[in-house]
Image 1 (spheres, rainbow, N blue to C red):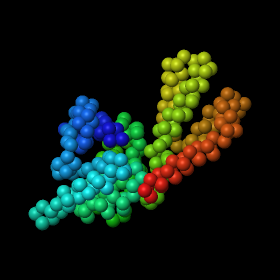
Image 2: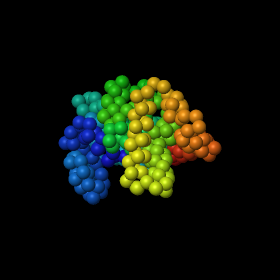
Image 3: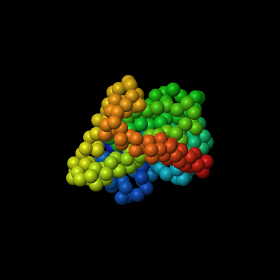
Length: 264
């Protein structure tokens, strides 16, 4: 996800020279330089010393270690006052409180859940902050994540599990469904390249129509589904397989796992 965000930021106008990435592995640092021409460092403390905005993009179990390492530096006082820092955490499953408790009070923390299309500037990021957070920090976080897609603000942190199920995990759902369509088209006799093009272009067209329309998904579906036609037969097959219930079970499973991760 870190690479996806870097790619998206650069694609949408952020200069690579202004992005400093800290990674412990020399191989990872070399790859980041080769792929994005960003600045790299092996030392977290040295990296954040010059940063106004810090994105915490590590595995959840590493977050406490990183916060312990950064806490003394982030809490430094210059000219009698603490320097304000904005930290955006994309560590899945960790609550705002579980991270902020490990940080000095001058750090403004925003919890974010981006999804993979962030890499091409088409992502969606769920954002959460408690009501007492500084307005400038909120605005800065939104501006940054809008560079790689759209954003939604959550009123309750419990909604983050639903964002995981609805946006964070959903690209895999769509890929799985499109993959099944592609396999079926090939089985019906279409060449693989033709099947792939037909499936992907149709999906892109359908999503573009849905985004542009004010009629709602159900109405759009009914417009395509002529009585006793080919589409109706396919829709009936999906309904006989109880597609709605299957999707609900899948999303419930994703949300439940997100809540389990939040509990540790």
